Length: 464
Ligand code: SAH
Image (tube, rainbow, N blue to C red; front, side):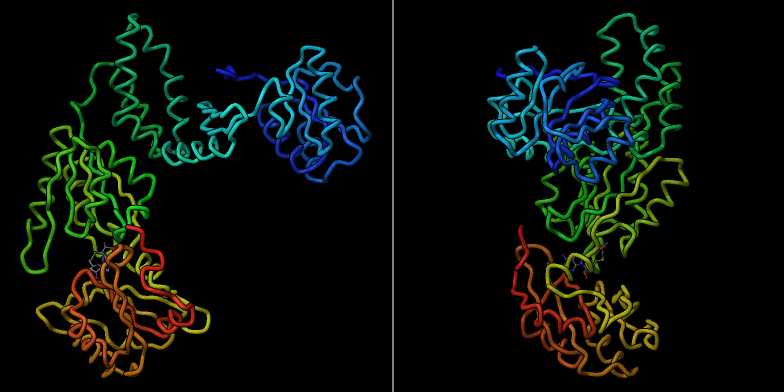
């Protein structure tokens, strides 16, 4: 190991920064965050850096560096673009035995700045010993996406109960098991979901020995339109801690793959006419599994609250007092539009966009057609393939021009994405000609023309 990672308490400590430019500013920000008292020496100091020095109670010295500037400093940073000067600062600091960092010159450093993931009080530092800072930053980015922003709050929770838990379990092993359970279970989930008071209540109940028996929880998770890259961090995290996953037909296999390996997977998908499981049975199953103490992920295509019957499912959960969380997903309209190169609104062509179900009850037309034909409005039909001939003819009948541009997007955002564009008049014909099948989204409106203008090409963004 070339460098030993240590976390430095700089609160109230004087730190010398030599240099007044951008890099000096970046380092100074970090130092000020850690509570250091800055002494910045440079013939010229940028405005932002000056403000930072003032607001953090530091001192600025507007002249060239002199060795005496090191007096009283616990840490030295050389951040000038003058290599000779940087080397001089490094040598002086080493001479005095004070830790020194020279920006972009590992050989002149006795300490280096790691890439940092800050979930204070939890802080993760990643270093490549100065050999490959880009690599360290890439790892940092992975950690950033993996550890929720509120993760540090768990440490605060633990700090508040630490004493009680220590008294309850004098034995270290028991204590460790207790905290592992807390940090990986529903108590942590509450805290991460921003429900700190509830987390504290559950933790106190656990300490008092009257925790409700292994309360399960249901997560209604939007899995997005198909490309796994479009999952949210939160969706992924919950998927990876699920005991059981109930999923729809719309959920792509590549997304299912990202669920915890040993989670039970239950298919509850719906085909149009032949429902694999009727909705009320899905609702009951969610309640039953949660009652067994399981963490249940209900994985839904797109967003759970957009034509996803998410509302009905949580109604049932709420009625039975089962805790739940809803995680939004990218809905098909956003995903398909972006991957097909069709902006849903545009200052010149569409001032509003409307998501409409194309699932016509009993094959009849019970949609508010008059509202749907108002100009400068983009229409997005979900589940509109079967009813497409009726949808197009009704729109024309109620006044939308037969020439209105329209698009069909099949399996949007996946590598199988297909896009066909035409007009309200010829869209149904396109379906037959190209054997378009579900899931397909229909977009109607002038914005569809922009696809050509943007010179979009098939599969431009598809990455599955
Ligand atoms: N909750 C989902 C919608 C469920 S309704 C969401 O927010 O996206 C199912 C309809 O969504 C399908 O009939 C189809 O019209 C549309 N759909 C979902 N995923 C799609 C995809 N990848 N490509 C095209 N259409 C899609």
